[in-house]
Image 1: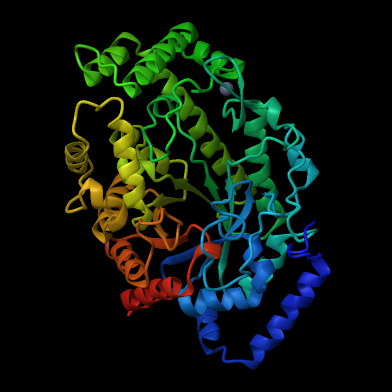
Image 2: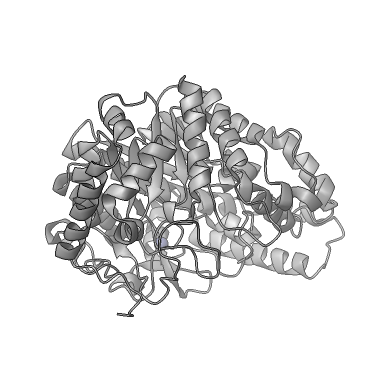
Length: 502
Ligand SMILES: [Zn+2]
């Protein structure tokens, strides 16, 4: 382990934390005492990873959450190999004004930051997932008692984000159009993968006195992958998945032809590659694309099969959580593409999602939203809608999405999306679930963006939090992680909460 790593053993961690408790007891704790007796009615959550508690101490971090952010719920990153939710600031991006000002690239690994218990991974090859980043620190055991003493709730977040060198991963990844296994995308129809997620949710709910889990899975189906129809920069039309034996079996059971689906996606790949090379069919790009869907309805059917696998996992995670105790809650993160891609929106019925969830964390990151929305427009504007000038495509898409008064394409990344976007997307979700589950907008408090793109300011944060609360949200979740969030932004969120509740 590198010298810069927080070389914590469990005992040292508790010692440090106890010191912090003693220090806190000497200082003013008036607000903390208030917070422990009178919980605000809405869930005010914050996503935070183990490294922040290791770097700054449990009690000092919880003090900041309560005093600055009016936070009453900790969304603790418990399982992921991804850097969006875990680790310090992403390498190369500026550090916020707290925590260690040093990259964790030398020791960041990811995995399960709690203690995996073997009886819950009996039915999966994915058995060795303990995160080694902080020695034998079990982050849930470390944070939970301190949170409870303050009357705070704690949810464990688990994310479908993997590394290729995790034992077992290579056996359960998706298979692409050419029959090759992908590096880290797990097949959502593979029985071992299904058993892993249910087992992990059960383990966390049985082994710790938590309030529930929040599950993240940002993966898209093959149609969106082929078109690059999200904000992601890649258009991976030749790497679409999954065509493995488990998907073939699921397709057979539903009467979907595997051969026709594969042929359709090969044609779609040819269409995308020709579009990117500016080779226009005489009938135009959109007509050629739509014709493909008409001639190969298996393209849509296979994409829906992916969604079925993904949503099957969600349903099983909720069932696993409820099997432990009925009052435990399962929530799902609904990714950003849902708010700016109408094709994706059509595949995500809020009323259907509400049947599988106690709450939905809907992404309405409006600061980085400008950069991401512009990326989406450029992606679809380079294939299906290539015949449309991109600024006009943006205006047209704004109408489809019910966005009003957002910046033109050339200013979108710098301007970000407006608080009005946060308000409208929150209202759309509330209307969609119609009271069947809670809606918790996720707010962008400092997601790194490009050099000239919008960065969250305190005013932005206060406006976004106010917009979400005024729209009628059941709470908010500060995102993506405390280790990328400036304290002034957190304080501005807290100010919005206090003013709303006053
Ligand atoms: Zn598969």
